[in-house]
Length: 171
Image 1 (cartoon, helix red, strand yellow):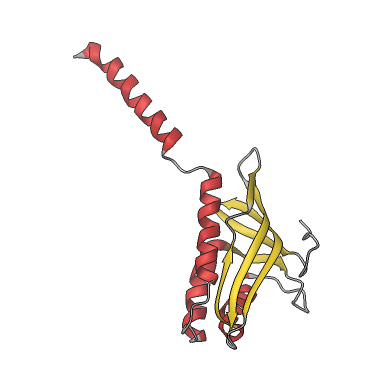
Image 2 (image 1 turned 90 degrees about the horizontal axis):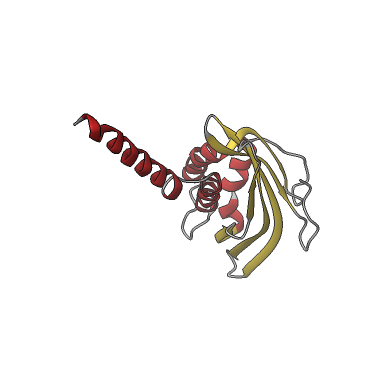
């Protein structure tokens, strides 16, 4: 039996390596999952008008997505807000502007630094929405999301959105 132990160890090591190579999620996969979570948590669905319930849901989801002191730059906002609390307020109030709305972040490019402790997701994001009047709206913007790996989990630390119609956001 002793002569089989090295062979069993080799097979177990190979199995572990294959699992790590093919089945464990990469940093980019984890970031894409976080972006999917952001899309879902910020979506507005018809009939979803209870702001208190929406705010509670968004607050819970955003606590898993953004750091508490996230910085963001969105040109339509007249002041220079920052923080997860302000983002929750903006997302919770979205049903006042839109009957339905969704943001598509699937086209973003994700670049993770060599140390795998920070990353940036950038590219074209698309808002598809319908106003309460029935008017359809589509808005394409260049966005840049800065992320840090904090206690083993990726979190968004900065958001920058281009002006309507074009200029690239500051990184």
